[in-house]
Length: 119
Image (cartoon, rainbow, N blue to C red):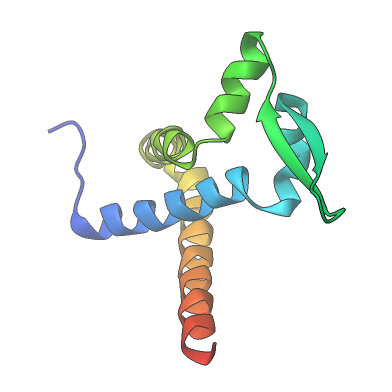
């Protein structure tokens, strides 16, 4: 078999994929990566509150990447492929990277559970 995948590897790469995908799609720290692919539209409601919407650029490669980055599921597929690739082709560099994101994912999930329990 080309890929020797066991449940432990699946779990670790799954956690790493979850965290890296969230980092790319949602986190403030990577906003500079997403910014070139989106336009911001500001609307004011009847109460004077401003809401900012981000939409993918209108055409070309920036539109494609903007649509990709606006879809958690789509980005997750590409992130998973990337993580599997680095695990199999450059494990010396890829595995520590994967482990860091997996540990960060566990921390994120524990924080969400903590917030749900403590309200």
